[in-house]
Amino acid sequence: MSLWGEPAAVRDETAEEQLERVSGGWCRQRWRWRGRGPGSRLLKAVATKLETLPACLSGFGVRTLHLRAALPLRPFLPRLRGAAASPAPRDDMGLGASEAWDATGFVLSDGAAPPDIGAEDRGRRRSQGQRRLLPWSNHAGTLRPNQPGRQSQPAQPDQRRVHHRLVLSDEVHHASGPSAPTRHRHRHRHRAPGIAPLLALLLLCLSVARRCSATTAAAASPSTPSPPPPPPLVPALFVIGDSTADVSTNNYLGTLARADREPYGRDFDTHRPTGRFSNGRIPVDYLAERLGLPFVPPYLEQNMRTGAGSVGLSNVDGMIQGVSYASAAAGIISSSGSELGMHVSLTQQVQQVEDTYEQLSLALGEAAAANLFRRSVFFVSIGSNDFIHYYLRNVSGVQMRYLPWEFNQLLVSTMRQEIKNLYNINVRKVILMGLPPVGCAPHFLEEYGSQTGECIDYINNVVIEFNYALRHMSNEFISQHPDSMISYCDTFEGSVDILNNRERYGFVTTTDACCGLGKYGGLIMCVLPQMACSDASSHVWWDEFHPTDAVNRILADNVWSGQHTKMCYPLDLQQMVKLKL
Image (cartoon, rainbow, N blue to C red):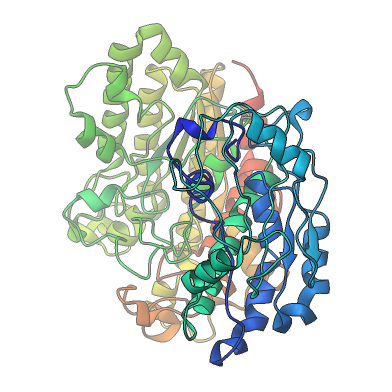
């Protein structure tokens, strides 16, 4: 019989070869060494690793282990007995309850002879024509077929399992050993000078420990698959905006407004730059997670991958759960931020949304695409660059032609027209973000010479006027289109709450950027890892214009449910997704 109950004559192999084949070479047939000489100093390490041997052998079908220890190893026998007393059961080897092994445990000895299979058993098996399968023992008594002096016959299936044994010993003689000439011949065969056998055993013990640790971990893992994640709350999340929502659109454009270098993204999930203008996540990442959706990919990446004229479900599967059109330095006015290079303005982004709708209509059908857009959430965050890179810089003498209130009316009317364009392609659920306190950004604290870190009131007042006009426009739009859901979220109010209560939120500074140069870190943008602080979570500002991951998380929590302070009117996002159109 082989180790697994098949006739041994199936293959012309010895018991050692059977074990080598079945166990994959991890538990060898003989564990022997000479415990003398310099190598004996490694006995303690060997004994420690041998604790893993019983459990490993039990995994390969061994149920009776007779360990006959050498004299230097005997002080460690109690420890080994403890390891072998209750070997871990293995039910993953193809053995059912009715096929349990006869043996019930392991036997460890410090000098007794190994248990014998029994003369009656040997005679019965020999009468059936089986060749003798010597279990693991302290001699090389295995016989090959047609070996001189013994005739081998084809093996017959045995009716019961055999108690396989292993003897660990530095001796050669035992009660049932071969004749004296044979013993001498085997002793000469297995003697190895010096430290080499002991080192080999130690390496094998290490291998057994690693193999059995992995096996135990696999056995401990649940056999039943984990339940599938719950379905997303909405079909998709589409993002329109500027650098507050850009997930890497500008990585595909020729522009200075890029965040594809370190230290940007150092605290992101991948700890690498992704094109997000933060040390980690931005609000749309947290909101996608809340909605049960993956992080939103950039539209330009998906469009380049599939091709602008591609049609078919396989070509739009990357867009079905949403994409981001947001581009850093973009504004409501097309020329805002143009001094930094290329960008995708608000009007161009809405055109990309319309292109996406057409692609989905061709791939899914008009009704399916309309239903997808109707149930999805559109996140819009844009407008800061119209002040930072246009009005406050007085580009083309804009301040002479427009007073702040008039300029705000121009921006809001453009925004309303683009939201109407979205409505025309069945967009119904919109999160409309107001502007943050731009006058508190480190760049303007540096530029306007703030002495104690106080915000620049002139800039913030202009922003407050814009936010007021934007909120009024959203309320008016809802009244004119009752089937639409537009929630205006006051980013200014949520940010000021953080600035005024920094200790409650765990921030150390509200004025200094984590990454930058000059006073408040607002003189020059973040371009080198050496410019960044060690702990961004203690800062409100990451660079001269953008908040840290910690602030983005707080703002996202407020958009989702008003967890820290109410920002969204009339509904937060959690309430919006529960309502049916």
